Amino acid sequence: MKLASFDIFDTTLIRKCGKPETIFYLLGMQLFAENEEKANAFITWRKQAEHEACKKKNTLNIQIGQIYENFEEKSFYINKDDAFLLEKKIEQENLIVNPSIKKLIEQKRRDGYIICFISDTYLDSAFLREILTFYNIIKEQEEIYVSCEWKKRKSTGELFEVVKEKYNPNKWEHYGDNKNSDYKRPQKFGIKSHLINTEYTEAEKYIENKYKYHRFYNSISLFIGIQRATRIVMGNDSFAEIGADFVAPTYIAYVTHILKQAKGRGIKRLYFLNRDGYILLKIAEMLQSDYLDIEMKYLFISRKAIAAASLTQVEPYLLIETLNPQTLIGKKVNDLLSCLQLNPNNLAEKGITFFYNRITNTDEANDFINKLFYNPITSEWEKKIKQDRELIKCYLKQEGVTDGEKSAMVDLGWYGSTRLMLNRILKHYGYSSIPFFYFATTDNVLSLKYGAYFTYMPYRLIKKNGLMHTMEHYCSASPHNSVKSFKKEDNRIIPIEEHLEITQDYLQIIEGNINAAKQILSFMNGIKLDDILDLIQTDYWILMKEQNIKMNLEAFKAVGNISANPNKKEFFVKKMSFTEIMRYALEGKRITEFDRASVSLTCNLYWRKKIFTLHDYSHKLRQFAYLKYMTYKQK
Image (cartoon, rainbow, N blue to C red; front, top):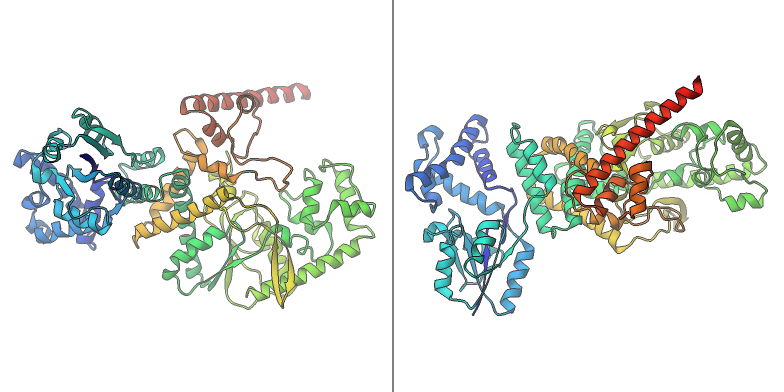
């Protein structure tokens, strides 16, 4: 007969809280919710109690009831039976099924294998059978072998001998997560063993270890356990890893911050701006049960759609105000024309052409201004701007922006040009300006003169090494393209989106990010960890920026070509050629929007560290050479 045996903990079942010790933390916090000192004292006792019980019984094979034999009821004013029954209840609440192992078990049954379960644990088989039955993993005739009942362990091999004596299989496969007791030990008995990977990611391990001695360590460990469980439930691939470790925690924390701020400020309606606001709205909707007084809406607004309309007078200074920095010099002509809803071919037909692709000096800037703002075509353009502005006004009215309800916009942030443009249009029609919530803003963000704004994180966290592009292109992935204009249809104003293909791979990013947020919030189940998320998300993003540990970044490739021009290839990340790596390392050449991630996708950890070091040294050398050259020129 053929036998397939499965380890239970961290293989068939996963603790969504992470480590077994976190169960003790949750137990202490429930037993002594109003007394932190007693809760901490109980947690300390419980961590030591198993070791003390093993020492007293002179065996590792003890049951949970024996652990509580020495419970100090008089010290804690709690009955020991109540305590250990509550522990089992919390354990049960935290155990979830590993979907990939459940599928594997079902496949093995179809292949004719007898199934059994083996575990070194202090929990009894009846308790575990109840959980496995709940998840429809175990059949009535299938056996569970646990060390505390058989007084033998997997780790010594004795429990495998018990199973062998019971079944005497001619073919035996075992699956488990422990390298010794589930992989090496079974092989010594002729069992074909398979190591199941349910480990923490390198990023998760780094963060947990960093806060090992922090006063909030238990809460941090709990949340990292939730991240791990989320990854495993989602399939443990790259989309799951990036979603659970980076995207979901960051945006859950940001949206929670927004909702708290909105509630405190009496804001009754939040508008989540198109594209970047999509996932933020989805998360806000997941949290809405705690903020029923706040209405949440999606608003199809983009810089491109309202830039020209925001020129309430056809004056160049109004355009320059929206630019970062506020000058025409350095800007590409085609980018400016696109922003102003002007087609270069149409202008050429009317005799307006530009002999430069990028404005590089004052003469070219004046030439650009004169050709657009002081030209016979200007009045025609101004008429079109007014028509577009009227459509935008009607759209804003249609969506309730101008109805007087206290509202705010939610966006990713950076410079604040959308805030300027939108509030300029509102002001033009006599409406009050509307404040914006931002994740982060640039150091030169547009001032309060253009409308109030509230910032969540410092810009310095994301402004270098591709993190800003990571948030734009991956974290904020949306099924909607950017809005380019509006049209009236059946007495409604309809936004018109850019015609850019959204691939199945890109949709997988969106689904992965949203599912990660949904799963994490489900596992948190009302546990308030807002301060913890604020604390650790910065560490995660620093790890992403530095790329000095192993990460599965394959999902980044799903972003694809990010250029608005379909004839031009511009990548967020990609695998680099040898020549591209050398140009990045020696010349400081930008190959992709996130070069360090591209190097990580291309090279193993050993070589990427050397490439990063070479890149940093060559950068310093180029800076030194430039300073020497400038000093020489000034002599």
